[in-house]
Image (cartoon, rainbow, N blue to C red; front, side, top):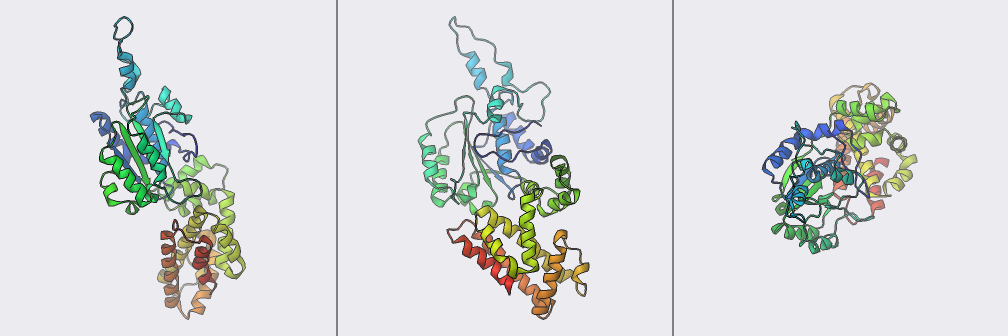
Length: 385
């Protein structure tokens, strides 16, 4: 496997070859089918949990589709076959076909097209993402695309449009894309990524070929971090792999000092919420990503507390095998306090279940036009009681 493209603008998380290989089984069958038939679905939807590598694999697929040696492109071949000044017809360009012995489809990483992709200068690729500071993809972002419907690819057989986080399209934007797909321009390929395909219009999903990228196991993430985060302590890598919940991007983030500093503030909140609330509210109110990180961690800690209330009847919190091992002290103190205040483990469990339900509701409000600071406070303030 070769490295994937990193286009201009906000680059996808650089993926080691092992990560590409992890997703290869889900892609290879489809890629071989497309290569054998020289037919590519006009709309491909990549789904999977946040941080699993959807956008990066969309770049990888785009690089392969545009690669001059992938067997998918015959543009260069047709250019060579154009009649010259003396009416000669040169032989087809050798690099337009896959190299001998290439069985597994992947971009060569060496041809002119691959080099343009790697340096972010490719011509037949366009990515549409939410504008800076915006939570949704709006219809205005697709009007320019509709104006280009009469244009085909310039340097290949395909013009590729990547819509990242397509589940954040407004209804108007999604309907605009649907109108384009009613009669998709020849050679245009749409790649969509979505963490939750249920948020997409059913009529749009019905037009897609869907590929779901599977999450990583904790062991796989720990192994990958061993080769990409060598300077990080082994214990932190192990815990990062468990806290990531199958997400490569989260695992990488958990190896960084900034994430652990915020983690420490959250554990201080669980241990003694009256002293740490304001700092957490200010941080989580900064942007959607910070709020989501807070919800991810708070949910994991809450589920640990619920598991304790179910599995550890009669067991001291200090001796329980907490999944969040680094939070054992904070969780033990919190569990004892809540059980005492609620007059028993059953009542404490109901209270933790209410907290988990509120966290789930907040996830649905992440991209809603609400006052984020008030929303964060609404999630955190009940912990003070």
